Image 1 (cartoon, rainbow, N blue to C red):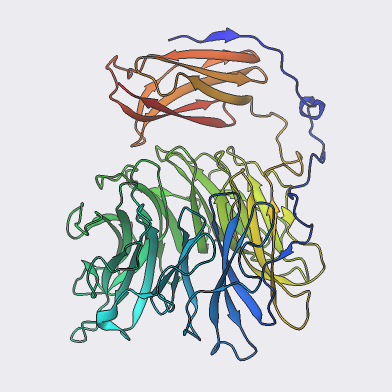
Image 2 (image 1 turned 180 degrees about the horizontal axis):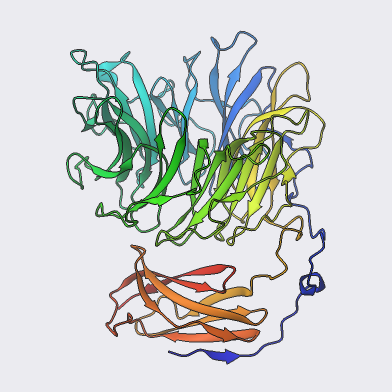
Length: 563
């Protein structure tokens, strides 16, 4: 197939036409909420450790630990829902999640997809709060393991089941004869009933420990769960298993070996599989690797992908979000040099790193060893990263926005979330549904207690100073019809002369079609794709991804063949 050029007139900002780009302020990265945030809850106690999830309507559900002066013995879990406009939708004092529990900390939180959330505490009770702030399960929550109440447990993952219920994973020492940890799972239905018995479902057991890891939904009502299998006391494997809604194992009984080490973070790949970030640790160093596993349990990235192959010491916490095309974006703390401790990397569906070889620094110039607080996708192939700067005396919470090409959109050091001059600490964020994020943080502006405040960060760039002199040429990529049966027209916009190539990948990350690179002038261009691979064979119905490259950046477009 050849490319047919359609020239068009493009209006481009004058600042983008200069050879050397000046630091030009475009628009603030803050939305319409008050500049220094809204008060999440009215309470005389301390509100700490906020966790945020999307509410599906542009707002968020915020969950936190509420403590009196006598904490931790009087720690309780509360929640509040905040609308896209910044209004508190539930009780001004928040909603109490676990009635009688005190001294119990939060575990994991996932949105229920309809404006509420599932919340797991560290006593292994789960609660479901609905979109109106109503507690939907027992006042104290649902015990995931009533047959062994009081047994020491190590928490794992929490994932929706796609039917208004939830999956929970953990490891416990119920076998007092060996004292080894075995790995278990439980499914809870919309009414709070345990579907896999009062003892849970045994996922993995061996002569050594099975340590719990994260979990994600598989898109068909089941879940993909991860854990660390101890081969002995010094060698480990990251393993995975796919569970059907009935609890039946889809993959081999002992699971699929994802790699050596510990499963740390996971995200769905959008095709029934998952992308997992795992660590290989020794006494002195930590190295991070990524792997993609499809719905059948096949590993798609041979040998795994070294997230930071340069060898600099990597550290926790780590985060992973999807890139919208079957790949993922990873963020981690890094010890390669003081003052540049947060790095990120994007890996495409085929397992190829897209940004600078050893990652891009989120905020060079910060104080020594800033802390990674979280990351969310911007739904455009990029991500927003939240950072805590230990060495700033005030205004400690910062944020950075990477675009799909790995460029920092919010200046070289990011943006400050709150400018009151007060100390800010623990913070969390969730997507706002429009490419930006909503952030909540611990704030010390009221000296008598610690309060939670929240605000929006929209997707607008703060500065174009980070852009290289040679700007990415690609702008818009689209196709029509889509879905299609026999052929579709892929159209893309080139803002300046560039060498462009197009490739088609299947959901497994395998390249099925590629066209030779061509140097194209500015304007609109079109390629007609006939739904065949490089060998001329008709591709089956399914989801595919078109990647358009210009040498500096790439754009990904989802295609659906429906025969």
